[in-house]
Length: 177
Image (cartoon, rainbow, N blue to C red; front, top):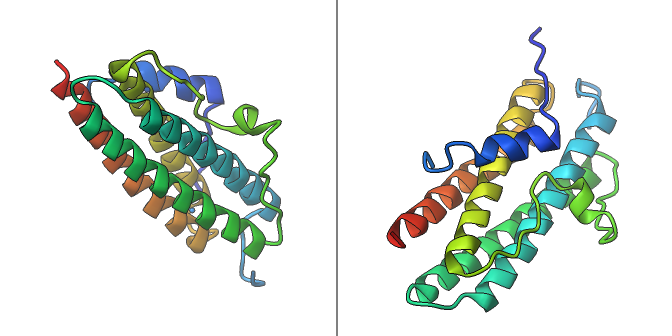
């Protein structure tokens, strides 16, 4: 059995900012459901914070490349909302309750809610948040391993889309140079 150490939120945030330019119940269920539900709720908070940030950026985008960036922000916002829905459904499937409490949303999220000052800043903050989600979800996939293949697969699917989002943001950021 392999032991995987999960990183704390600040480590995820700090690591995401380094080298930014390099732009997942039956009796056979073997995972600790409470731990998995907690991980799903943290991911749910992360997706909701990202959805809120992308929606704000969609409405606030201005400048030469604003139209292209706004289109990406809206597309990503819609996908983040789909991720949140999948996570909430899985939490309920596991007998838990999805935590949508706005009072503690940012505190539970791995990503931060950063408004950004101007288009470049917005794109940069979205890229950092995507990198946080990538690191976090990759660790969760490894932590869950074979103990909960359904949840692992959900996280793997979301991880793949977050990697696409990071590529999109890195491309937009590069296009501003």
